[in-house]
Image (tube, rainbow, N blue to C red):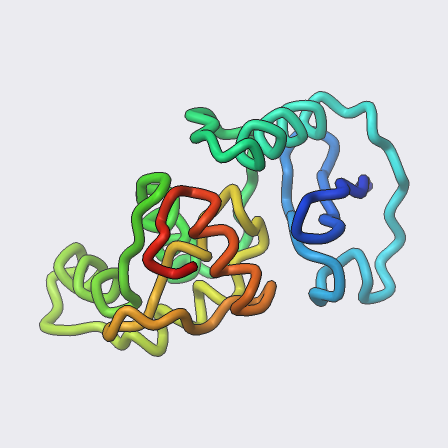
Length: 167
């Protein structure tokens, strides 16, 4: 069984989805998720994982680094999971390019190069927005590209983290 709750963030309503133990999705309104593709979910706001996620979001939206992760479960292909694990290593207030992530993955796999576009595809399928910080990934030229929540939200999230270069 999966459960959901809504969270009224300063950037629009967020949907949090859990398997009862782990947070499995966090997305902005209007974003296609399991929760709006015909799967049946029960509203249940009193789960400990939701309390932890709401605490994290409250700290985050006060422009502070939460410095902890709520219990999350990343479900995807091995390649996607390797990209998402690198996203979790991007420090609060910092950005990296798709190319930098591709270079790191290539080095870890012992191959000459990895496609930044393939990395972009995996970043775009990140099921747990904000907490797995896909908004911290930018284009090679420093431009804001590719955010499922919209470029304006991405700009506002980076500004919230103290990265005024994108305001």
